[in-house]
Length: 409
Ligand SMILES: Cc1ncc(COP(=O)(O)O)c(C=O)c1O
Image (cartoon, rainbow, N blue to C red; front, side, top):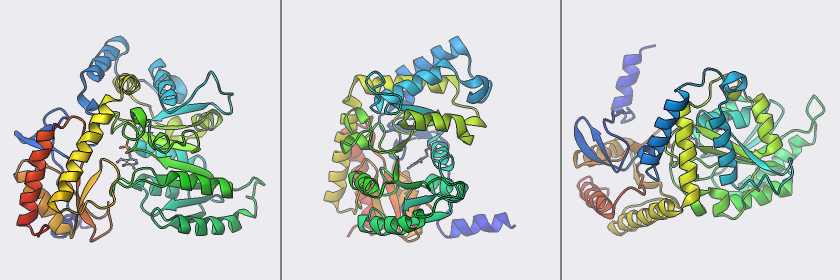
């Protein structure tokens, strides 16, 4: 393979990823090659990535327990901190172990990332003879998980289109009539992102749950961009819609609003225990390190204690979006902090991002393969740590560059 030609072609097509190196902590501003840039491209929604309480918790845990866990979690690598984090996450997501029976109580399993959690959630549950029904714009990790599980019966429904989901459920019902070779009923799973990461729109989760009930199938939501962001105290998309506990499998990431790294699955206790016993990603790969886990316990505590950061995030989101719309930008269908500036052509999006950068604003161009060709955009990610004057600066730079590159008339 001629790798150099491949790289050159990527550059010519505007698809080359110019990965920048950050020299400062994650914050409202980043230092890159010695220069300070307004940070509008991190998923550090609440500013927890460098929060002093998380830093202190990580430092204290290292002093007490060291750094590594020594083994996969299924052998000697499950530390008491992992269990504390899982219990706190389950409670945060609505578990009430004192009032619920084992089969009804909810639990959590922490894995090494949101990507890995999606792989584990799907690969462990589904096999060749099962059925998956997936939104066409689902995250790459869901697509990869379905491939990895080699699911034999795969239906892709049009993005957020409930009429099309019903059509696919009918087709799936026909497949379901025959049992698996082992005599068991086929598992039918509807899977969707909660917040779609490139457009910022939300899945119509209550309607999906209602359809799943009607057709008797399971549901899964990847709430990577909803955890810590949607619902009171950032408890996620099911709380936002008032359907907590009604989605069978909820996947979250710990690398965005929670500020560190890792992923988790929540669901009823028997399901989570099934994953703990069977998921290859859990059994054959080490878990989170000691400082990561200790810092994450602190993140959950901060969110449990107060709604303040989540509220501040949403104030900033409203401020930025209203400003962009007033200037005349097309922000697509976003209903979350993810704020796209729709550009279209890849090279134009790259140039737009480049000019923003020269003017002091770091906001990445999102292009193929992250979105379809010709649907390139700039993705702005406001955070609770931005002040209004930071966003005013961003608005003035976006307007200047938009006019210069004729994205705005
Ligand atoms: C929707 C969605 N799911 C999963 C992931 C993966 O999460 P992580 O970075 O924790 O692996 C991401 C991160 O980009 C995401 O946007």
